[in-house]
Length: 304
Image (cartoon, rainbow, N blue to C red; front, side, top):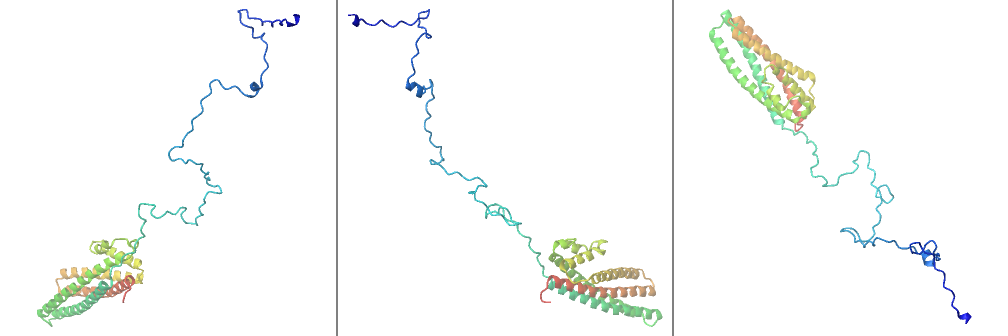
């Protein structure tokens, strides 16, 4: 009977003064294997993120990485040659048109007007030569009238012939001057503008402006010679202009002397000065003919 007596109950753990078991006095239980290897989950773990879908336009498959500039796989452009643009523009890249190269100076026809000018210069020179002969006749008639060898009829005959010849010579000279102006305007329009100090219009107008008409036309023709690279020497050009100025001044002097003459000797002196002016004019016409010919051949080297 004594062997069947149950064992005594285990002693109760000491209690807290308020009746709760004392945790310090509670026996510690040994940790289990699961507690040693598996960490406890957090009390408030965030929910797993839902699977995201690609945005519109993004590829759904992995893309190969793009090489950076300078990497071996980056396409390299060839080095441009010296003076060439680094990146030549492709056709149609720009909306505006490409710059147009300057066009060559348009040649105005000179052979016809040049020939007409030269022929009229010759005709004017021939008429002036006839006028010289007539003026010598006038001087002789005045001397004979002073000596009583001829009457007033001889002087009246000289006046009639002289006036008629002066009118014809003036018409031919005016025609030659008009052709000269047309020729000079066309010649000035045919040379590069950079070679001219004045426009082709000024090449015409400068002949009619007081004071400047004494040197502007010479400068203008000199510019044409330089721009056309014509074989006109400075002596030829300067001689033509000097003779032209001298003949013009001589005509002014002879005209004033004729208007002021009241005696036969004074009238004879005025006619003698006019003869000198005619000689200077013929010499200037010969050089002017050469200037027109050489400039025309340089600018319009057609059939000469």
